[in-house]
Image 1 (spheres, rainbow, N blue to C red):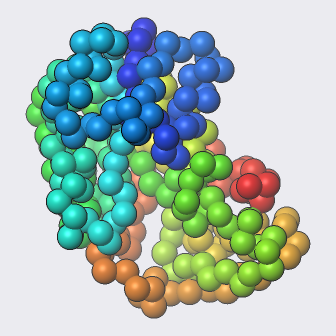
Image 2: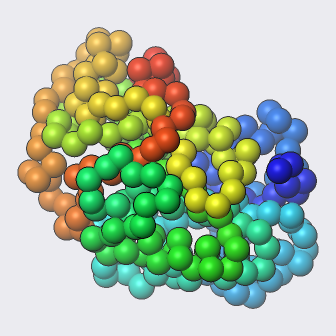
Length: 259
């Protein structure tokens, strides 16, 4: 299928959104990307106004409430993660970013596997998937994304090491670190149905952090068990996805070390 000609991006100021904007510019894609203050994705009137004004052929819905431990106590998380994606997808063909968190059972998980969420955030993302799919939208599951614009562990790792900090990194959960720019390039191919876009290399965050520390040359990395962290909403113990087609983490360590 050809790429949509005119695309509206929500969540344009986020980690993935910024990477999509940069990649779209390099490809000459007609991308409309309202800033967070210009578009509330949960506001039905704002949605209708921007769709009527911009007339996109597709929506790339990257807006999300990603503060996992706050989802249980913040009603806005339901509006952003469940209600808004389906409402947008009902109006125009929409590609929505879901999460590997929808799987609590052992992985790696295939696109056709039924979601098995445990925590509040995971249940919201699974409900969001169902709502988007019910009106003909597309679901892209991602996980462990990092990049220059983010506030993720890997995004801020090199800066902390350069300050001489000792950084604790989870050592007992296998992850598939995924660079935001690799993800953005794949997203702009607009895979249909349910798809997985994830890095092909597996490691723990401790492995990743040690590799970055070797290149930075300052600071230190110590292993931490996930259960020792003050996390209130359950995380999957094995959220690996397949097929894993994006670049492996070791090909992006130099990038992580430069942030």
